[in-house]
Image (cartoon, rainbow over all chains, first blue to last red; front, side, top):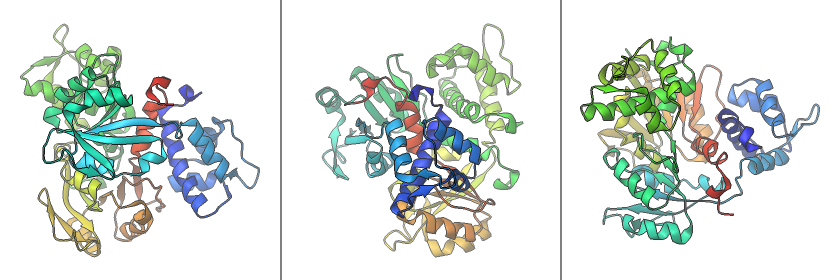
Length: 211
Length: 211
């Protein structure tokens, strides 16, 4: 069924999930599609359409059961399924992501970081140890890790990627600004922060820009 | 014209731009749509379609002029237009983004960070000073800054957002996992890292998951 959810729907569902989490913390039992739509400045019918895709119907007048809808999104997007991953590159971004506890709620289990700097190897970030990159091939096999979050400097991105591919990594979440050259057996998700934000700025009125 | 580019096209154009940058560094004068398509594991006709939207035609057999196409993408996506922004929250992610020089190539001018911790105020990250958050309202007016990159901890996200709105910030690039409640005069771009990556993992075959 997940195969039928578009990227935009999945993205919105995770936003609905954040809202539901907040509402649940506040002890709100029901939430309506207009409440969700208002917070995201999107159309209420869009919210209803997305949630209908989960085969879930709200109650007339009162809306959706916060807890039920939250669980259903978690189930649909497989939050409960553990996704083992390593962070490669213990620089600022790598450390930031290692300290980003929110990943765990979504099933990401980031158990270790890797780097080639002796200044970093052996240190522990948020309970995760930084290992020598040379240890990666052995550890990926040992722990059956197939996902790497890549946060190395631009100039090393391709060489490190070649090394990851040789080590049996199948999925790379690429935070570098490089387009990585990988065989078709390996999948790269380009985070492309700049691209994400340009989608936003390019469409804004000129007053966003200081000419 | 930019208004007619979809988010996905804009996102792909930034990826093409990275490829063109690499090729230009290598001194490659021409690049073909299949070369770009292969690197991104997408369809060659998709690349041609996207580039056709820029009203740019390649030469039969040889392809596109690397330098010309690169400049055209920069022009279309307004890389040369300076976009002044502040980073609010000088934690790990805020510091990582402050050190991410690549932003400048895209016209982002991040001139300062803001925090409320006396441990951080006054320090300098990658040439950018960390100021007391109380100074933000005055400085945004003084420097005509309308964009904030929000990297504060989850529990402070909404309070800080209310403060940014009062201070005249119009665009918030939200890296927190919260959905922010803002008036319709303010626009929020939810980076939603998790949503981005789930788009990728949810559609993968089960072998990405360790059950």
